[in-house]
Image (cartoon, rainbow, N blue to C red; front, top):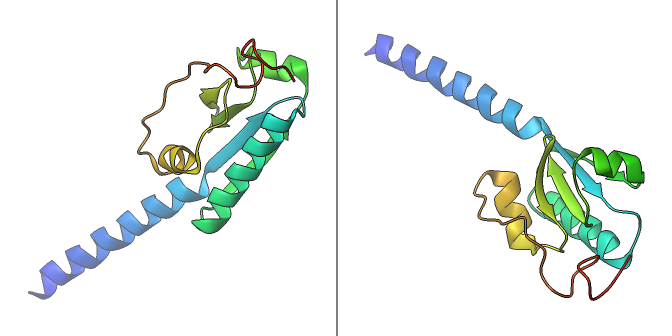
Length: 122
């Protein structure tokens, strides 16, 4: 019985370390030149991170050349751990949380009426 307890404790510790490393390593970049929808996206991401105690670094990227390096032509965009997750629209808080927790159900398509989608502009 003691042997099984040792295995359980070691496995539990390794799992906890894995989870902490995964959570601690979240890097979020908000790509946008400063339009209202880019600012709204930044605020939403910050709210989700704060409300859910997610350990993450949030960086605002406004340099157009750096944005283009991500192959993003419409903003706002959200990059998580160097992968573009959303572009051309403002996501919901639920969608942001899903992305940050790995329950992603998003599409990277522009929706009419969002920033730089043809009906409004940064």
